[in-house]
Image (cartoon, rainbow, N blue to C red; front, top):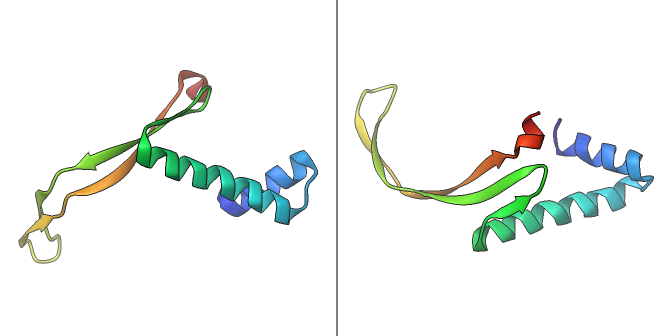
Length: 86
């Protein structure tokens, strides 16, 4: 399922127009994005989104075999709840 499929499902299940479903889905996703920047976002029965800071590290270019430095970066981690997995 992609974002477009999710929007269609929300529109169908709630009985909204696709335009309103787009607003709802985008609002939820944007709130999760902005919330993760401040702290972890926990959705009971679904899972937890949290920000992870990855350190710079050494890597290898697969084409040339040359050693390269991979920059430090931020990433999002998702841990599903037990109910989500079951």
